[in-house]
Amino acid sequence: MDSIVVTGNGPLKGKIPIAGAKNACLTLMPATLLSEEPLTLTNTPRLSDIKTMTELLASLGAEVTQLQDGQVLAMSSHDINNHTAHYDIVRKMRASILVLGPMLARDGHAIVSLPGGCAIGARPVDLHLKALEALGAELDLKDGYVHAKAMKGLRGGTIDFPIVSVGATENALMAATLAKGTTVINNAAREPEIVDLATCLRKMGAQIEGDGTSTITIQGVDRLSGATHPVVTDRIELGTYMLAPAICGGEVELLGGRMDLLAAFCEKLDQAGIDVSETQTGLVVRRRDDVIKAVDVVTEPFPGFPTDLQAQMMALLCTADGTSVLEEKIFENRFMHAPELIRMGARIDVHGGTARVTGVKQLKGAPVMATDLRASVSLILAGLAAQGETVVSRVYHLDRGYEHVVRKLEGVGARIERIKDK
Ligand code: UD1
Figure 1 (cartoon, rainbow, N blue to C red):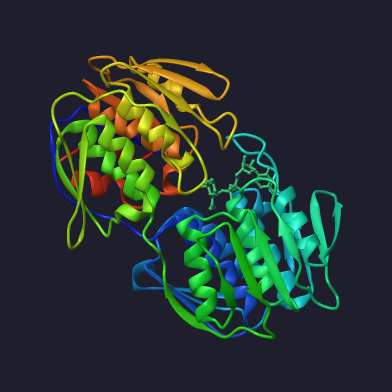
Figure 2: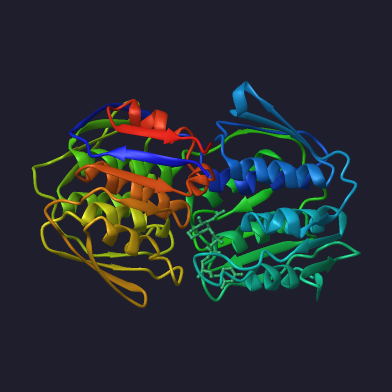
């Protein structure tokens, strides 16, 4: 298994290009299953999760062609000849469940493996299933698979989500585009990735209103056509790299960055003493002075502070002046980076869903282990701030969500290297 070696750094300077959003792409790709005509995505990120979704769609009979060095995906679901998403692929990535709604909506049947356990908590899919039932699907759970049927097609209905779920909103939204009649999704997720999906579906001919708010209304149509759509900027990659100059000092421009994608996060950076300003081409980040101030963070659904930036924010707060309290409200067991940061000299107390981080003057390099995608990048950020060398192992997690992480950080002056496993 490869590892990444980071050596403590001085100020960073330069520009980092931000890719298209992994999480948007992982829901836009299954949208191809809704139509017999081609769907082309541009600004697609080059990540192992995208390869896994490509493999899954191909197993169903879709054609997915990578163009322009993987930055364009041309897809066609003209000949779907298999309606079973097998455990072998689904177990690799939870977002696989997003093929269920589209297949069911278009062809009236689908069998999809349940995703199973996950390192950051139980993460069930009950809300996805209840939403599809509200649209008339008949579901049967057998041997770890969901068998879904709607032989006369789905029909519009009211979906009341008890809690906000990004994935369940996406599955419901896609399924409702081809259901007969009107669907109302209450307590819908408002993430930019949902708006991006709705925008693409509208280009395909769907009738959707209210995306970006808590109530989405969909008027079902008989068929959807093809479209070409650029994937929205990855706000999590953006926030991650914004933290690099925040941690090391210097000045870095994040190309393609937009403040509206990360308003709550930018507010916390401001409170910590980090300046963020908009330019014609992106966002510029620099520290206001030498000291990082402690800030409290609570993760929430959009527009709140994203859970996917909690680990990286913790890396920043490890060297802040004072004690910060981080509360994780979306996922249980999402502090697995804390023991690794402690190995680097951080002072962190975790109690249930709350972590108290008391800043230390200086982190120290250490061998550490990546436990999930966002945790692994938080260790790299911490390594940039540490004295000496940090070796992050199990970096395959990183490849799921960050393209060219070494190249991007090297480009702004970081001392970072990937060591290939012999
Ligand atoms: C998506 C993102 C993930 C992000 C998360 C929260 C993708 C591919 N992944 O994940 O990076 O961390 O949003 O912003 O877009 N829940 C249920 N039942 C369900 C579904 C969810 O109880 O059927 C719970 C979850 O356990 C969690 C909460 O709802 O506590 C929110 O999860 P959800 O928004 O669904 O996350 P994902 O869509 O899996």
